[in-house]
Picture (cartoon, rainbow, N blue to C red):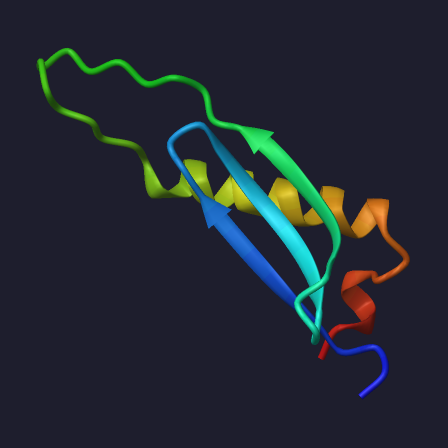
Length: 76
């Protein structure tokens, strides 16, 4: 169908990306939000608050929707 798209979220150790694809797999738009480095007081440990990654994902999606005519309101 015309107007159908796929949203991909990539949460990595250095950034969170929101990517918009058409149904043929062509990348239409993408945004990237950097993850602040995390340092633990315990050697070898790595812990992050899940709400931190949620907020970065939301920010990446808002930036994506602002950068493309495919806004969040047109998604089903």
